[in-house]
Image (tube, rainbow, N blue to C red; front, side, top):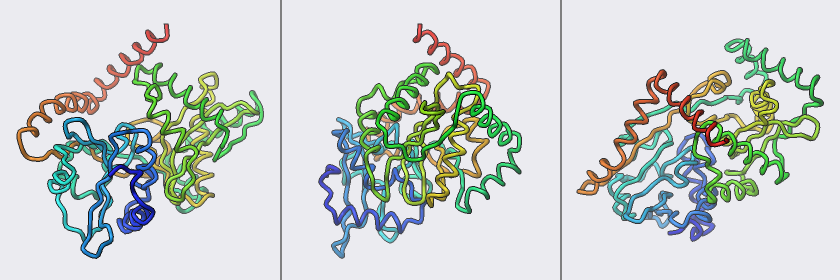
Length: 354
């Protein structure tokens, strides 16, 4: 069915089954994220797994292509993917895909513990996290011990920013739509500057972010955090939160203030505010970055790959997708090549801005 066709009882059952999984309460795995994607993506679907007792035994959100190819819901922007299933329900990936008339199901951020799909994963990645479950002071102590230079430098830059530019203030949950527009403009400029595809140039992604920014539910709420100097925003982040997890999503900053590292200052302020709001985990998301290495206290595991049903279309799928995926993997796993690739992308970005 389409996500919007789920009734209140099914949505509540989804939440119950998700709680039984024991996995971190990532907001991307909550029904509200699927409902939001369903409003902007016409191919969004949810398979409801029936049970003998009458209660639903599982929910499988996905997007369907014209020839039966399936992808994770919100593929390309979703940072946690998988099926929400009663752990006592016996089911195979082949059965699930057949019931959905899917020839394949592709994922790029499959969460750990998804036993139906992990065997089909081609690669696994670290997703760095910040654990503030013991409070911000405990996290700060970890930073002082493990990354003392990083912590001293970042806090010194915040003091310097205040001396040279004006009063520094932070808003954890900013509701001003203008601040969200500013963040999206910064992020688009960053994508262009680094030669990458501008996600916000896709209307469905922009619409999804605006929609989630207005959502207020316990399992999946948009949170816009902004660092200001006076009344001027200098760094911002938009992410999704549940009661216990903040999933970091779109950070960006004003390049006029780059020498102060406002993005790093913002992340420390976010960690402090999140701990105060009862959040125990900030998921920084898959992808290597120096700032993530400096901020993190540990890692979760996520997976990339595809489950493909047996048959002639399986070979066609692999011919169409595997060469590209393997090429990306080859470059990504070789730091020197990855550096060359990044410099090439930066050059593309400079040419775009001329």
